[in-house]
Length: 114
Image (cartoon, helix red, strand yellow):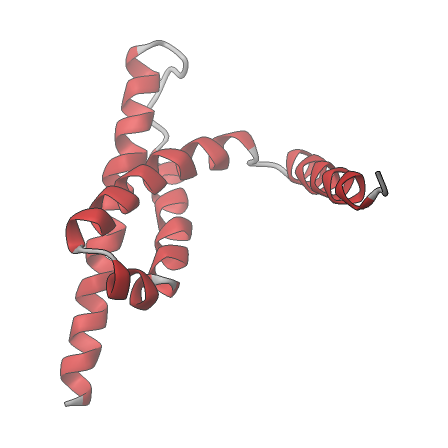
């Protein structure tokens, strides 16, 4: 019983990771064909798809209760596309700190009385 649940969860994570990887890989392949990058960045593809896969897996029980596997597949692929772009853009701490500062400015702006 417990082994069945473990195997199902492992296969679900592999399913999510595979489609996130395909999304990130296709985004990098497109950037390579459009001469935005000179090489395929396999480390960034692997890491960005791993990070987004963990996030999607965390919400998978909630997601699968409301959506079908086809929708989850589309969500994984699209998240893979987006995650590669975010990982490529915010790959150093200075960029990440700027992102946090923008969020704080937006948060402060939304709290101002009208």
